[in-house]
Image (cartoon, rainbow, N blue to C red; front, side):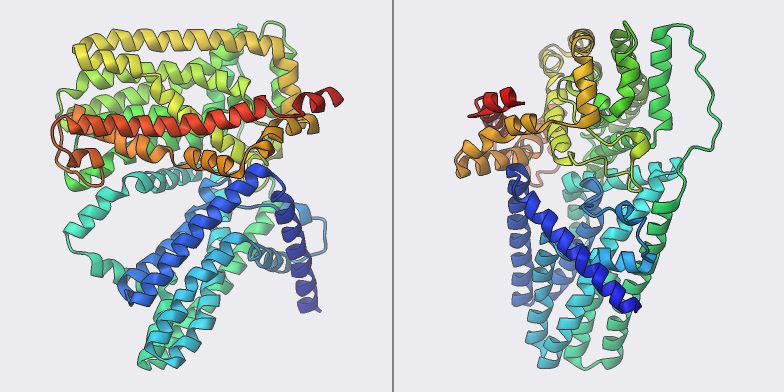
Length: 613
């Protein structure tokens, strides 16, 4: 009876998952992201199979570990992964936790990512075929068990991460892990170069064999040499691991759908006597009490530190002074949807006469208080540690410009381009998932990364040519950004507050959705694909091939050429390559952004759709 119920539940959830996937393919933007991701995944899977065909066993086992790592950390950067079927939807059904978790697991296998991972794991069959027929046969159950472990590890990581985010200490730990992983994706070359130079490749391969991601590989190798005890141990280990993860995930699903997340700690009341003081106190409490706010703050600061500390592995200290500015840029991008995160709570501001200006200024001051002192301390300490005297006027000019620019841009962006998210009191047991507009939010995050970074351009240029005169320019430009964008944002909020509240409460109407997407379908397919590619990969020539070599040149350190193309040139050609790469990255962003902008602005039938509404 229990097996029959589990089968029927799994069958129903798979049908629901596939129906949702077909619906997602109707949306042009989501379809382009799915196709792009599938193409990149297939390329990586093909590379994995190629390694197996060449017999690169040590490299293959490390690559399999990276596949499992991708399953674990990937959803943490994508709003908790695909939660089309949320466990909260099924709380009223008479299903046991084990039945529900089994059904959700089977449904999770009905997607693009598991199919691509299955193709990559075919490398085990190819490896087994090179060893013996028995090894090739053993590879089939090994790859299936390995795939189950991949998917279960992903779901379990999201569940554990959600539990951590519901406690203050856990949110900090989760932010540190997240920041390290993202910084490693950008600066991991330094650690890899250090490992290669110390000849530890063999050690890494041995460690990958002992990791769960290598147990299927170990089973195939053992079958090839006739070691039946190790073969059975590896397969049994995968089966037991999958069962344990399923049981733990089931327990966490019960906690997620039944736990009472209401605050139990007594809260000190506001004692402010003025509207400005009350708004400021409220915003500061948001940064210290809302766990997602705190998580993002710790993440931004930790990312700046990890990003600039990792090159120390190869003795490169020239990045150290820029940890503070990097943290500010990341903090500004992560705070791009402040008003969108308010949800329906915005009505308290809209319904209070004259509250718009104090509220906007309070949010700006709270941002400066949350990130200003700590980033200044990081900048001073790490610049002193680096011993790069020429970096002092540069970083002290750039930092105030970035702080003011970020404080102005975050409020303007969050009012002019607010993205509806789930209200704080309606968040699911997965705090990473804040609504159905994760893709739109991430697009604004990327735009804000570039916008905040370019806000320091005047101060940086003056500092490069005149030294310490860049400091007053940085202070002045930061103050102007803070004042001007705060002023226009307050005016916009005063005029369009009710419309913004309606957007955050109900989301976009069908007419607005039609206006938003009407022009995209009229574009040629090649132009849409090229625009998506430019927006997705414009950061590669801009950041690692232009900004980072620029910093290395400005601080006078050429100790490591690594994969920086400009540093392999001679003399003035280094500056030429830096400029060309920067221009290429900005041009890619400009082409992609303008393509989508003009497609929506001149969408055929957009005015008709709006008029019909």
